[in-house]
Length: 271
Image (cartoon, rainbow, N blue to C red; front, side):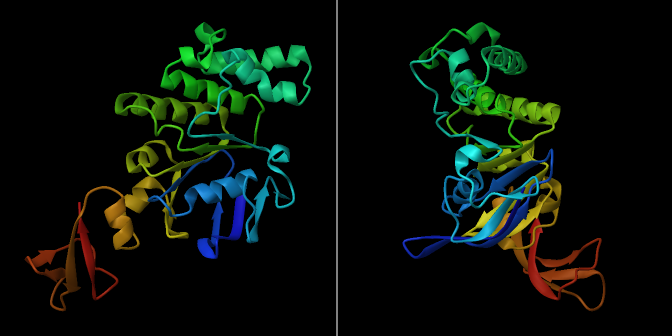
């Protein structure tokens, strides 16, 4: 998936400012950032639920700009799961296939494969109100995956779960993505969640990408003060390179470092 120079405004207020990003085949990519940074709008543009003012979205080598959401090779798992309360777990999972008029035999085979993959066998006859939060999320994932999308979009699907369950679901989601080899794009404001599940993170602020890279690279080598403060705890102090040795002058005194900095003055992040 490739999004190129995406721009979007609401009521003449820019929300996305010339953003470009790529998600590789089989990659777990996370759009991370504070509320209002534009990450959900970008996800909705990829899904076809919003139209960009300018820019292109390409999936599997095909431009998506003129395709409606139901024609794109993507599925979205929403924050509230959007399960149908009057349908059983099985019928919720089968809903998309039945809408596409897939043959009944194929519906049974594909749905049961998804049910087994997500360990939902004991719950297939239950209604959503009889499920826990984690079980509802697995049903929503099964419903999205049964359509065999090229890209699965996840709009903060774990935000409503308690801390213990959220940690368990994060590990399960990562395991599922790796076993399927599908491209997952997750939106979250939770730094720990992003660090746990992601191959790469795209950190956004005010409609722009501040930094993109692996979790360890962004954590160990932040591009600026915002990135250093947003990902994990850090003590930030002003520093200047010493001419006499490999140290730095700081308000706390001289500090020796292992690698000579590329800049003369800046902010030092100590984790």
